[in-house]
Image 1 (cartoon, rainbow, N blue to C red):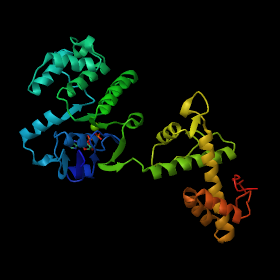
Image 2: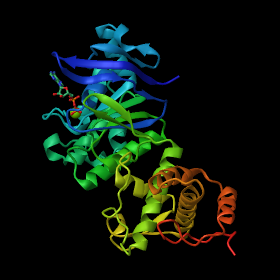
Image 3: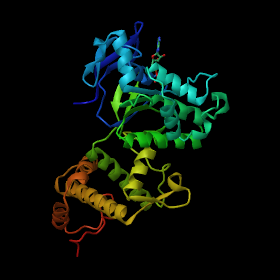
Image 4: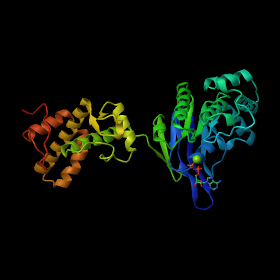
Length: 360
Ligand code: ADP
Ligand code: MG
């Protein structure tokens, strides 16, 4: 059973505006899901409903097998206290209370005050030296860390974070994200709204909202493999035209943002950065990537030749079918096709067909 599950969750304002429309969202125990999407797409609305700070117009939201709509006002408060930790983009710290007092105020809200535990919570976010500082005496990153300490004071299983790094510089973003990684490793479930694809990639899964409609961005491994094949293939074609492949010259299928596909391929050892500039400069194959690219191009061009010459298809049809087959032909079948065609050295467009083991 899913820890969090919404069914056709809808929030409508006035006649036409849907902040959320028929959203089916779910998260497993211990999962970290990034909620992405442009401004005004419904991200905060989703977080607020999951945290019982807002209610839907229709549809349902279940957390820990409880339908949130069935909770009374006071049960909602209890639910939030016991299960949810909230981190926002705005810090919402009380300006005349110190860091320690701000955390203790949150304890008070959770019907307990334990100064030692509050100190420990702040130590854990690296703020032992800042206990008596007022928010105005803390940097943005330090204030956000106080907020995280405060959110963790009730040991919540679920952390809802709405653009938690939205107001932070790079260094503080790094520190705060490290905290989230630690929390994830400890088994907290994290639902995090973010604009930032680099942060989104740290999550186990990404979903995106567009005008209140949810799209799951996580590709199946099969889909991802096809995207990577497509990129490897384009690199080959650019190479034939003596053009350096890079994020600029490649046309990456828009099922994923292009930088994230390249980062994944880098991590999988298919490509490498050709210069110091990293992935923002030219890229090159690793031996593994090149072997795979050669095999795809070989399958594609052999299939083209087969369809064009033996099946009497026109070039367009042959091409379209080759695009399908290049992903699924096994090596054995490819070699058989190659032998059947007499081990041709060029495709119908006169592009070289890479040699295979079967070729004389
Ligand atoms: P996001 O967090 O993705 O920027 P929100 O969830 O805050 O988006 O808002 C989604 C949409 O709902 C926006 O178009 C916003 O203007 C609208 N909206 C949010 N709150 C209200 C409200 N109280 N009254 C009317 N419209 C609202
Ligand atoms: Mg928002």
